[in-house]
Image (cartoon, rainbow, N blue to C red):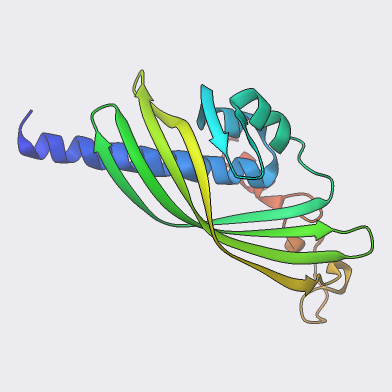
Length: 179
C-alpha cells in the first residue's frame, strides 16, 4: 500500500475507534446493553478501580446500574491513539457527571479522568479489549436542583427538556431518522 493509502487507512481506523468510544459513552449514559456490547469484545476486561471484571460482569454492573445513580453524562475529550496493526492503545480524557440519590437528597458529582483502552480490530471491527480508568479529580457540587422547577426558575415547556431525568427525547429524535 502506498503512503497515502496507509495514511487513509490510519485515518479511518482512528475514526472508527473514536466512534466506538462515543457509542460506549452513549450506551453507558442510557444503560443500553446493545450499545455497550457493540463497543467491547466479549472477552474484554474492565477495571474502574471500584470494579474489575469480565465483559459479562461489567454489563451486569452497568445495566441496569445502581438505583442510587439516577443520571449520568460522560463527556469525552481528546483521544491519543497509537495504532499498531490490528491493535491500538488509546488514552481518552473524560469528565463524568453523576446524580446520586443518598436517600436523603440527590447530589451532583463530577469526576475527571482518563480511559486507557487497548483496542483490537477483529473482522474489520474495532472494539475495546481492555479498559483501565485513571482518576485525576473528583468534585461534589452539592444538592441537585429540582427539575420540576425548570432551569434557573424558568419552567420547561415540554417534559423532555430535562434530559434523561424523565425519559430521553434523543431516542425519539434518532428513531425519527429511521422512518
